Length: 362
Image (tube, rainbow, N blue to C red; front, side, top):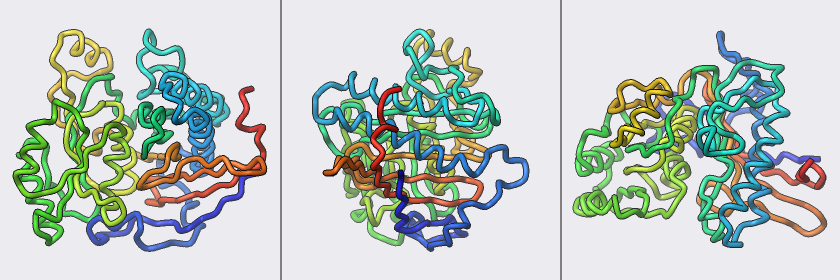
């Protein structure tokens, strides 16, 4: 049995204060169960079904956190997520997954999942976002999934993507991928009404970002360097009061970019991305996925559109979600955020599980 404890439900409203949406106005619980907007094919019940999917993956991975085995932790999460996905009442196609068919035995791009008795949907997933983080038991490892109406998610190849993201409440278009780091940092500071020194940027700690880091620091802004987990890094921009992150900058995985865009589509915020493609084989891979302009600058709505559902469960403790807790007396505690774009609802679910059988392989 799963007991749902609801600290609050935050709804997207018109023009909230900058960066305040996640902790913003509360709504009655039933507001999150509104009927889909006209034209939506996603059933509202899928929202909580998605929670079960990420919970199963997170618990499986959490059993192996801190063990130093990235492959085993990732495989455990993949197996658990796939089992639960195939119970969902959808006809799903994985568009962002564990790799292409010849690279991944399951949850590969193009794989069909679900029980085939529901709407056609696109699925983007990362059963273990931050495999290294989990293996080392460091903060912000997540199990993540997004579902959209068919054709709603960008089918991105497994290459790098240059990204920029900020949270909700800002004027449209204040940051741009083609602007300099200094211009973007100053724009965020001006919009917040604070000195540049009070702005913090989140950047993946990689050698390729040496010049970016230097440029941001030259403005006087602070930087939060992260080792992995750029889905969480982007989502952290939605609540700077809690996370300390105002803007995300830099190059990370394109699949992670689509997942992050799905989350921002539900919460609110701005994001742009551009594929980093330099080789002929990468161009051919992108072409096979229907991408003709490999230098296109993608807006948020290009990466995630229509009705979108997003769920993330903490594997390890982080700024946004607590990790899985294995409590005494055969009890497991999970912490999940689940969102829906058509209703603008964000739910935080702390669950206490006492039926251990549902987490077993079968």
